[in-house]
Length: 451
Image 1 (cartoon, helix red, strand yellow):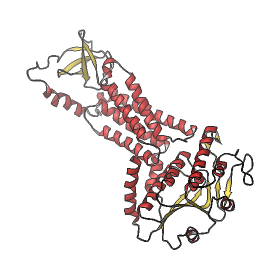
Image 2: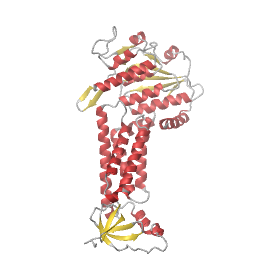
Image 3: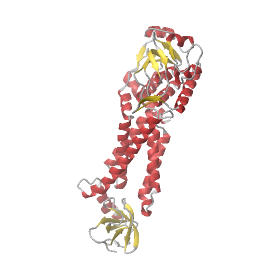
């Protein structure tokens, strides 16, 4: 539902910009170069826009060596779900991920010299290119077979494109991947013919004379490809967590909270549009944030750390599941783990440094908010008839870490306290400066504590 809502919003904007005319009947989408996550957004919105404009068909022209498998899976789903007829035109080559997308189209045509296939999944790492594990090959083989079967094509031929152990008499040899030429594709039902140029293609698919609309690769698709890259994703995670952590420890809602929410919003928005993130990823993130909030504001008083650890794990899982798909290779999955771990760790460390050091400088974010909250409206909430400032001036020490909520010990008596200065470690000498009955506000004092 979330992906659909965003998709139709973008479709509306696209139609305004494209200005589709009444005779724009056949749309062309071009998959040229490597297939990435920006390709998913491009195909999804192009297909949706064409359907909304009443196009009679969409031609997807392929000239690609392949690309990311998880992106190809999301793009394949978009093609299978399209409500407008789809035609693949193999202009030069549709290898690997490109072969999957071409097979997903309802009809296929070739340009002279076009080839389709060679789709075994590989891993690209520091050691170069190597074949993917058997489970990835098996899953990809099943994906190709299911896609071919959905379009009424021979599934075994699609499997032979992925797995070199599949042998088809008269078509493939042992231990060699299948690549179909225009002639062999026509003979085995994977092509309706070989054509040269747009007019011949339209004649082949009974659409001669229809107007042509080319759906250009948009700036937004390029932006999405950048936002979903590993290093930009790591930056968004770090900024988002850092902003929220600082905001949780400083009363009021200010710039850090807005920046944090914006960074996390951009992260999930971009990953939703490319087909990786779903509601489960967002649910994990929100669950983790709730657990961290409980740790900071509830369990801190009893030195309870399980909620905080569980919260960070849930937050990490939310980010991780938003960055990988069902067929993401182990190499990419490990990189995603590294990105998430680095983002979470850097965000937490920087937040701790800021909370422990900024209160001593003139750069104290939220200091004005904190002071006004503690000394202004909060003090006016004291109950009528209650002795004013009964604890003010009492000195003791922090019985737990104050982050900024915790427990103070005063002459053997324990009380819930809030640190005016943010984080204070356990054992820090403190003095009560404001007594609200249900909450005592304290600050650090120099010298020996009085108990």
